[in-house]
Length: 84
Image (tube, rainbow, N blue to C red; front, side, top):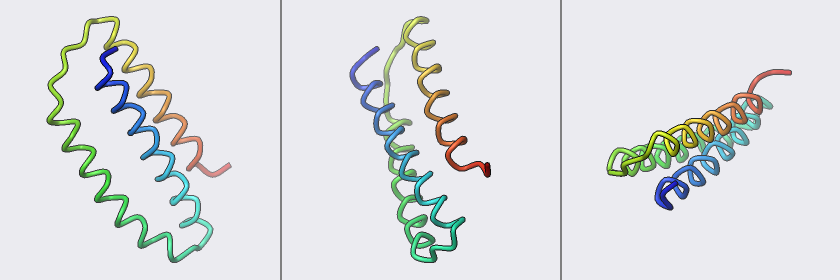
């Protein structure tokens, strides 16, 4: 997989881990975490701009790897933010 795509996935994973952490604090009643969500929304918007600007061609195999990794990160976020 191209380095640019790998780096984007790593950035996405860090962003989603940060989001999950803040979400847990919000659910626990931490009011300071609410303001952090606003800052996080800005970070997510910047990430989305970078993602939109990326012009990378992936082979079928690379695309499958990307989808698996994206799904893993998303599932990790969902499991961290869902009530147990």
